[in-house]
Figure 1 (cartoon, rainbow, N blue to C red):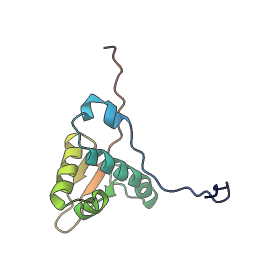
Figure 2 (figure 1 turned 90 degrees about the horizontal axis):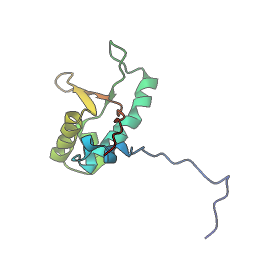
Figure 3 (figure 1 turned 60 degrees about the horizontal axis):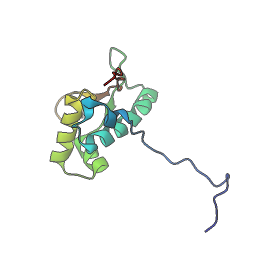
Figure 4 (figure 1 turned 30 degrees about the vertical axis):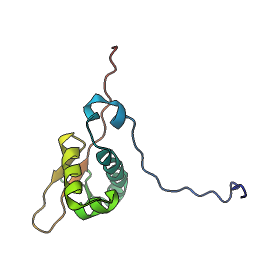
Length: 119
């Protein structure tokens, strides 16, 4: 096998999986699927910003249907819905219903740094 030279390297897309999701006590009971889906949804925020998806208060939102969450997580609807609910309960996202047949607007909230305390 040959080495890849600098001209053959390509930047592959990736998701940021923040260590805070694993180190912070607030997220200690969070399921791994929630951490992964949060990272995936967070990556969509910049695209929504470019597309001008902002509400009347200039807050950026994304769309992610339950079917898309199923696809991302490779799971069934119940698991995807539980994952979205868990993320909402943890304060990672806010979902706003738009009405019948329309996907929820999802506001992906930034992670807040936890104050360090000496134990």
